[in-house]
Picture 1 (spheres, rainbow, N blue to C red):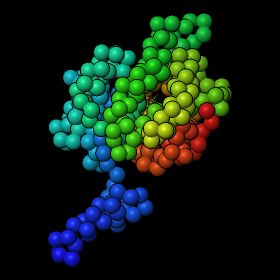
Picture 2: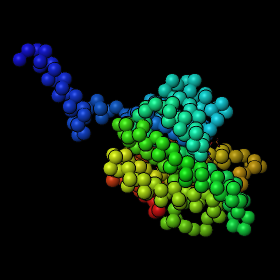
Picture 3: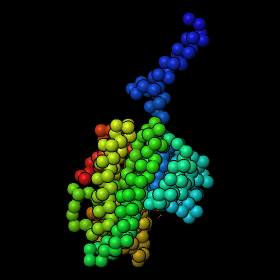
Picture 4: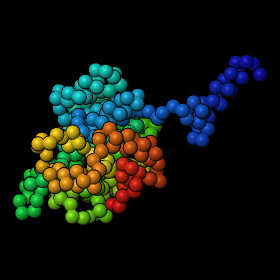
Length: 287
Ligand SMILES: NC(=O)c1ccc[n+]([C@@H]2O[C@H](COP(=O)([O-])OP(=O)(O)OC[C@H]3O[C@@H](n4cnc5c(N)ncnc54)[C@H](OP(=O)(O)O)[C@@H]3O)[C@@H](O)[C@H]2O)c1
């Protein structure tokens, strides 16, 4: 056998080994998993922490937000990293969703993170004074928007290697965690609806090899409550929670901490864990 033929055979064997699960080389195992991730609502809060995390991990990051021109933190991050691209996307706007799909032009998306959501003030969400325009917006952003984006980007995800779609749910939308919480009718009902939609999706997409995950990020300090000084105004939505936070009964975590925990869960998301609801600390939560 000539040296050339031998070299070709060895190359083919190495390629086959790389393509077969279970035959990964030691170098493959040491290499962190990367790919292309698209994140909705990534200009602030948990979405921005996701964008920063995956950018720093060397992923190709498509950070979407409603108003790129006002996304100062994202803009600053993108000047330091050429693996971060900012794209406009209001998830409730069908024209913007279609325009993004067209701009992506079939680009594979390994990981789609449906993060964007609308919590809003508590007052219009109280029974007796429900604001139905507000309620409608909550459903559009928290339930219909993530589905719309997922449907539109399904081919991009299907064309990728990892094929994972993550939804940010909420313990506040869990039927199994009912308790004397806040009466956030619009937020809780829209998140509960999202949970059910994710359950349906996880079954629909499994045959396509797409793994769907539902995560609760914990109670995350996206409003700077941990950094409040005595006398600083407390955001309305946190007012009833402050005694519990101050007594240590309720643990607030920072966005970076939440994202580090969720990224680990996303790495470990297997088809067996699809469609189930996991807390940031890995604990399984009831629906
Ligand atoms: N923080 C928590 O403790 C907590 C707990 C449980 C679950 N979660 C879930 O975790 C996710 C992130 O929460 P967060 O606290 O980081 O939220 P956040 O600070 O309120 O940020 C919400 C993000 O969603 C974006 N957004 C709102 N409407 C949008 C629309 N129509 N199209 C595109 N983007 C839109 C916002 O953009 P603008 O700046 O343009 O408004 C913002 O980037 C949400 O799904 C939330 O429900 C959070």
